[in-house]
Image (cartoon, rainbow, N blue to C red; front, side, top):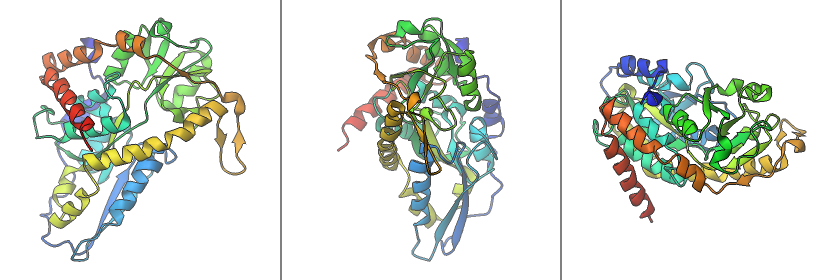
Length: 370
């Protein structure tokens, strides 16, 4: 099961320092009668959809909260991007209190692999509901190694479904067999790499900033990315020729808070903050986020336009999106979840089969929601 080994330094850091907590051991006050200043760092561009459609409006909701004794919040968003910490360091950095809150990447903790299981979730809302519940249920039940002990997950915020983008060298992929022999970018998430291998392709670790250049030179022939890839940091419009709609995974990022900082909040402040957190809020923001996907999907068809005004448009980047029959892709990747569960149990000491069963139960519960 070497294909599931988490070799990233971030995981080692998370295990070794992620539980130390931020430097705030002051006992929580009894009364919330003043402004509480908090910082939040998104590990992604300020122009990314998850910032505009989820993080910014969520911060506005938090800052609108008030307490009966005059308490309030003042959350400041700190330099979206790779500093003061990037996605791979998000768990350890938030746990240490580098910022009070931050955008937590699922690849930084072992249980986060559920978010990369191919075709596990049918929608962004379902993914938000299931992952929030799974990651926040009774301590030690699923997160058996306590990687999340240093943080408090406030909401989960999945990305839109990932689509397959390929170059002329990769061809227009319409069935799983078309991927045989291709080199496909991965972000070093073990489950995603295993999925790419199951499809007959080779996973190549490449960061977003190098992605367009590697596609342009032919070092890789494709990648999985949301429709936002037509422009923005990925800039896939000018370096790919084909887009196949698969919605294979919904990467479930989270907004998390340093647990020690949370514990130090007045009780009334915690109660107020919890009104804009949880599974329902996660689903609410997932739905709002999804609504924004239509614009980038249309830009993929028409070709993107870039601001500032007057916009510069690239109609030559547009393409017909191939909406794949996913059955061949699902068949090719059918064993990935079971292999992951076996690895989680045999190598890491988790209850892998129990996790998959709990996911199934939560999906039933989500489907039954009014």
